[in-house]
Image (cartoon, rainbow, N blue to C red; front, side, top):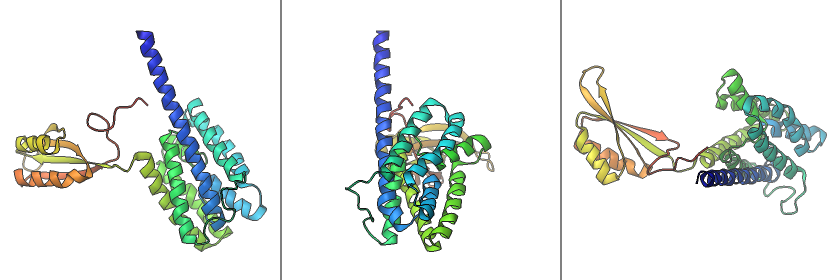
Length: 296
């Protein structure tokens, strides 16, 4: 019986790993398509190593994919030390190789000069497609190399937040792109990076963003009953005390969907007009009634 459970667990982990690798392959493919179809024809720097490769290619004609591959080697070596060894290596190698090869290999299905000459459309669609690609790679618990690795190294080594690390590396690349291409192109590249970040966050974390409700009230029971019956959501009860009044109160914590927020506001207002209601945003909720507690 114990061996059977072990076998099932191993099979489940292998299935999860296969799914991760497929997500990384698909995400890297979309990133390459975005670069070839939208960003390279419009001379929009993509940020990170690929953006630097675009700039160098503009002056030398060297293959962008090859430069991306070479540029990632020292970052990969550093990443091995800072980011977790074999598991990091396998996912990163797949992402970098897929991205690099698909940039340089001529594919008849992809138009050589892009789909449109409109720089606005190239910035928007390039950002969306590359962002979806990044998001899929992140969902596969992988990294796309380049500034991804550098940002995580800076975060682990110097405690610099990942978002600030991305800002630093991409700002340098965009500045160089302004010199190489034009400052107008650099501004459009900033728009593209912003759109890409939004798309990546939506895909990696999911678009079904939930809300947390924090209710501070002296009459908790009616509110709890209504949340149970009307919203069919659970409630966590905590004891609290007003800092100014010193009055003992209950703090109710519940997680609801965006559509349920008006109902939560209405029942709180009806049952205790003096209650204090805080609405927050939860990017991910796991447990009963929401996503399952998956083993990472």
